[in-house]
Image (cartoon, rainbow, N blue to C red):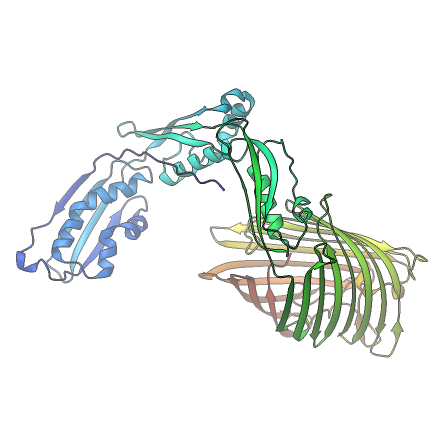
Length: 590
């Protein structure tokens, strides 16, 4: 929301150059003069010079004349010195030579970078209202070692110098001092001592507190839809994170197609900054249709309808119909926007029919849920009533009912959601039912899943996944299948059909009480946004741990990091099943 230009002052000293170029004949001045550039450089600076020098660029253009080439050679010393100065080398020796005895001519550029200059001293001076905040100044100095990109003793680099100045200024702008600015920055070079002294002066400006919230752009939805998402109060000290979080939360609501959150910063006291929220409302109704294919459930078609202002209260009504070869589903629900408590509530009903691994299941569900999202943690509490009818291949029928309570906790701690390279995602769930309370059986379930990303080198990544679950009950026949386990297929054990790993009963594959699945995968970039992958999965389901036997799948795959997310295809062999299977996936499996 605030832009600041950071100036940099770097002193570059003359380099030594030896050039052997004859003046071109006047008749040759407008004739194209092709040449080949050969660069010899110390300290692996070849790529830097090849990418940025005009002498290299014009070689590729192949339209340069001999006169133009002579001018390029005259200025190559300055160009090389400027480039190496950004990497901390201020006294390079440059030797440029043109050889016209061969065709095309050869330009030899020899660069000896010399010794790098290192940071000797760092001086950050604060002025403005922050002078009265001794505790804050002390904390800024204590945290400088963590945020400063150029510690004492490190090789000077222009990119790190710019980053350090940006971080120093942001440390003020992000909290209490949004009008802070940099009034001076200097990098003083001593080429004889090979040192650089860094200094910056920062003016914090006044300390601001939040003023009243002003909302514009609403015509159909109540203002409390926005106010219920505001987690800061008038009179509190300004924090940029509050405004960023508010804008993100509002933009995630389906009610708005555009959200802008900003503050007015008065130049005179009292320094109270009104918060301005400007929104553009989305269309009230939305109809979506789709066609697709899943290696788990086959060809599918879908239809959905959403209305954003039920009862003129900004309640969201949604309904959907999904038809797949192995599964069909119909659902409807109402979502109540976030309350002032920070929670979102929903009521819903659904019907699902599936026939997978010779087990036909009809499910009727209705329930209420309460959810919240804070930082990188999602929480869900759900109360649900379910009636189920399942029929085995031999005609055996089970028809349990249950009133269940469930709690789910998900933490996403990754460097990026679309294509993670480091961090982890942890999912924990627990719940169950009590016999006699609209339930045919007492049961409890515990489930956990973890995915860990390990970066390898600059671009490769190693992914480990572990999934464990157990349902505690005496009579499994009176427990709905959603509270038991089957596995197999994409995102679980590849090389096996969808939910084919379970317990054989009555000619069908039925779910069991215990689950364990693990996976190891290595991803390597191969071309632009494409990655190759090799993996091994191992897992299975049983009725008791003593009977558990895992199945193994191994294979290779390709990943495309598309604008809409990760799209993957895997070819896997199920070792025990002695079969190959192809699996398609979309999105990162958390």
